[in-house]
Structure formats: structure tokens, C-alpha cells
Image 1 (cartoon, each protein chain N blue to C red):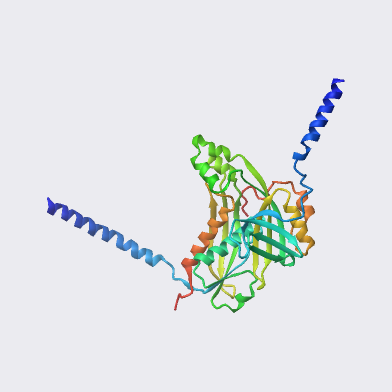
Image 2 (image 1 turned 90 degrees about the horizontal axis):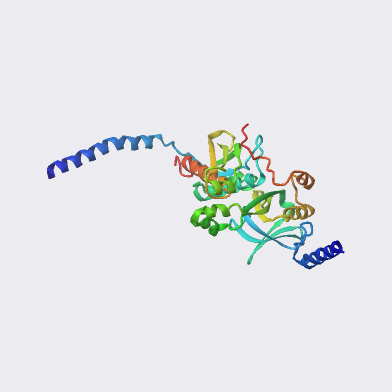
Length: 174
Length: 178
């Protein structure tokens, strides 16, 4: 009986190893190689075609800078217009344009739970110093249940910083 | 005779309760305004309460011993807006929302206080662009904006334009796609 149990466990382990190992290696292969960037300059969020309240525009910009400083993995995070950015080597410039915006209601969220979500979609383009596009991505920020409408900007900033972290590194290619 | 007596009673009650009536919104004091700094002011944590004043060509935010001065001339844009918050807000508000029995927390969410907001964009010494958001009691935002403009700040929305826009109507309420 013991031998049968041991045999079963061994087969299960072997099967698990066989099934899981190729997935791990596939995931490792799918991860894009990081591009070298030691500094990033964040441009003010543009909303040419969509009317975005000023507080959302500023909150998006400030949250983005804070999250990139925390989690982006860059040595320096510069703001739009910062003269020191010109001296930075391996500088990446982040341009963001609002492509979708729905201002929900905090009151409606708290009363109904299911309605009143705020969502914001932003097209982000990471460019090099010469203006060549390195990476483009549409990132969505939401607030569905708890928090003020401006929490959507924090959600967007966290996701954008994660994308920057996954694709750029000061030590890549070294 | 009875009508005259009633008028007298009404006049006397109005006189008696007049000290309790709040000063009109147009007669705000010139001194510092109680605000909450939501985000963006260099050297100040997000959601810090303090006092905001415009004096000597500077926008001054004070929180305890911390003082942050911004030259009004460095302010590139001042925009006012309207917002609201739960009467019971913060951690206690969230707790009441979750823990209050029979959904009374949700009912309490219906009671909200209106707020004004002031959003500014300014440059630091290196030319870097910053943004900051402050919320404050209703009626104070336009006064702060006017004082800033008088001291050399700039705006993309003139005070006359802001006044003509109906209050509380945000230009971007519905989802907009290009």
C-alpha cells in the first residue's frame, strides 16, 4: 500500500515538473529584454481632444513622478522643463496623452458599490533623446469601489511605473 | 392688530438670531485659509492639512513648523474647481462604510460637504514643472485665485470665464473618446 502511495506521489511530481517547466521557460523567454535608461523625464499629461479637469491632469503628472521615483528603477526622474535633464545620459522621455476619460461619482460608488466608477485611459510613449519611439502602451487607471475620483490617477501611475520598471534599467546591456 | 404683532415677532426673532447667521461668502477674511494639500507641493506629504495665504508676492503654505513659500510669479496656471467629501471622512468614514449595521454607512455617504479646489502649476529653480492641488471650504478658492493673480501669477481660465460657467458642472462628466 505504501509502495503504491509512494509511486503515485512520484508520478504526480514528475508530471508536475514536466508540465510546469516549459511554462516557466516560456515565460522567461517572453519577457522582453530591458532597454538601457538611467534617467526619465516626464512631460505634462496632454488632453487635446478630451476635456480633462485641471486637478486630474496635475494629479496624473504628480502621481506618475512619485511612482516612477519609488518603483521605476531609474537613477533620476526629471520633470518637464528641468534643465538638468539635458546632461543626463541614457535619458528616456515619457509623453502621455489622455485617450479616454469617464468621471464617476464617489457618492454613487459608496451608496451602490457597483455604479459610479471613474476610469481614465492614457496613451504613453517612451522616447529616446532624439525623439525615436522606444515603447508605446495604453494604460488604464480605475477607481471602482473605495476612494475619491483622483485615486484613478494613482492606479494609472502605479501601472505606468511598473511598465517602465519592466522595460528599462540603468544596468541593461552592461 | 394681529398682523402687526406677527410682524413684530418675526422682526424680533430675526434680530435675535442674526449673530448666528454665517457671514456671507462674499465677505471672506483676508487672512490664511484652512486647506488640505492633496498632492504636489514640494517638501509636503500628500493630504496634509494646513493654512494657505497669499502675501508679499508669495503663496505660503503653513503646517505646524513647516512653511513652504512659492513666488506668485512662478505660478504658471491657477484653476479653481468644485468637489465634495463625506461629512464623516478619512479612516473613520471608511470604517463606518464597512462596519455600520444595516447599510447605514452607505446612507451616511449621502451626506457630503462641498469643497472648493485650487490647482496650480509652478516652476522650481531648475525650471521643472510642478503641480499642486488644494481643497478648502466653499467660497475661498476664487479669493485665493484673485490674490495670486494680483501678485503676478498667471491663469488659463480668467475669473470672468470661471464665474460664467455654472457651478458644479464638470466639463467632462461623460466618457469621451476621440
